[in-house]
Image (cartoon, rainbow, N blue to C red; front, side, top):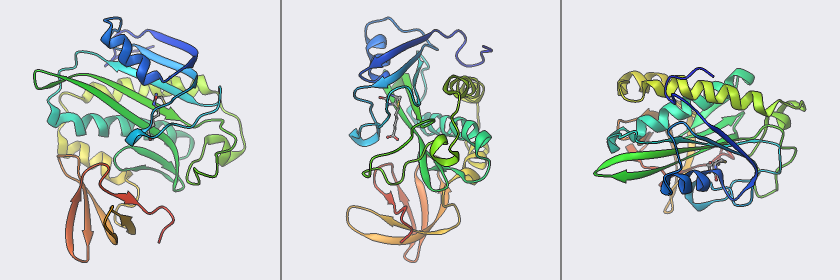
Length: 253
Ligand code: BTN
């Protein structure tokens, strides 16, 4: 495979793992990881999602993968850039199949027709004030036939079209796209990146409903700032939010 960011990759595939992110973390901790290592599984017994959630995936139906970025020495202020680049790369892969209706729900969920098709969990380690390593955990729902009723806003390639897809092919596209997109990690200008990211955002420029632990309100997403915060224009004026501080009301009211 061509390589711009990952140099040389070892693809480590397993049938069953607790979590590919956890495995990646263990390999980093034990000194067994190389930059560009890719951990894949056909099933995770405890797939990790954002905010301590678990990631739903039945055996052999989906892309479950973690990319190890070792010794990247990134300024913590550039973390939003890493997040945005990874989201753009995953969006690009999915938009190849679903050119209409694919969007990034800030900060980094990928939706098709308002339902979540992919999730991204980036876990980092800090050293000397810098982001030393990053694990890019990505789950893409490919052939998942059904989702439990607890996940009414989840979808897969298969649930959208009724077709079955080649999971390895989607993985290969993802690998190549990430490799190219992340080659801009150190030098990309934030304003330039903002211009690529914002048009892909779910709900940009549209009046929607949002919830915080305290309240529910309506507003229009304006974009993101260089801290990676979400900017929402509301009747009370502009507001900014960090990840986890706000929930989009996907039911539309
Ligand atoms: C989210 O909650 O949206 C993030 C989900 C990330 C899931 C992927 S699946 C592969 C990798 N390994 C994990 O344990 N989680 C990520």
